[in-house]
Amino acid sequence: MAVTTQPGSYAPSDFQSGLCDFFDDCGTCCYGLWCFPCMGCSIASDMNECCLCGISMAMRSVYRTRYNIRGSLCKDFLVNAFCLVCSTCQLKRDIEKRKEQGIF
Image 1 (cartoon, rainbow, N blue to C red):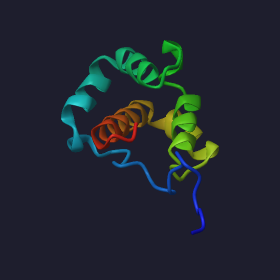
Image 2 (spheres, rainbow, N blue to C red; image 1 turned 90 degrees about the vertical axis):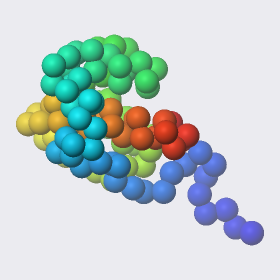
Image 3 (cartoon, rainbow, N blue to C red; image 1 turned 90 degrees about the horizontal axis):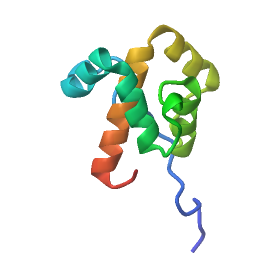
């Protein structure tokens, strides 16, 4: 039997919700809209990182790399530059879905 993936690695995938899927989880979107710094700290806490890193392009890139989510540094930069709240909400939704699935 041949091993095709390393233990703990993930098959290439996309984020589990779209950038503008606000109605997938209205609570998360409201949280991000009205208490954006708190959401950033919550994401950083989920990922065992510094609170100031929660809303950065680097955090999105680290998360995307960790879970083998398709994308690029350029796309991470553009999404954070033009849609920071949407990007942060998407990241939080994905974290919550992975927690529910037991793969976070």
